[in-house]
Image (cartoon, rainbow, N blue to C red; front, side):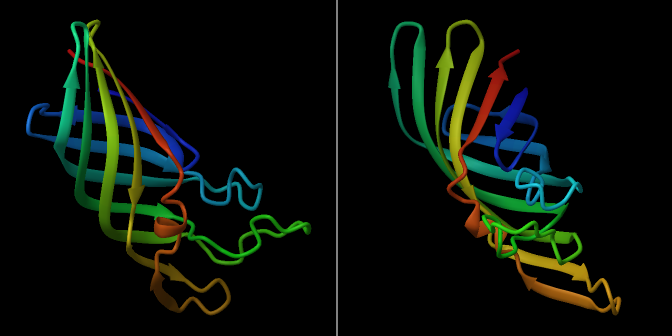
Length: 162
């Protein structure tokens, strides 16, 4: 069990399994638009991936594993909108909504002798975003762009192994 830290958000993660494959469950906030000051509304995301170890290296008090896998994501989030680096004060124009889709993960996990695991990874989330139009109340379904545009944001998990 450990903490999740990223420009995407912060939260808690649980990692089960260690050898051939591992399950990573993450419950975190979503900071899309928050860090740039475009909205005060923080979203929530649940993500699961089943990762498989590609290669490992071991030492006396440590081991390092390269892993990759796939899974799913669901949450209440804002989606990416143009104008993040605009010189004008510009709030988010769309309302938050439900995001659901697939998850792809690749990372490097380091296990240390003192029951500490450090995992640095990158994730991509292709999916859909369902929201309501602020003025008409109509349901709008669109591609979840933040899931792709924020794939280069690193994710750092710090676990304690019980």
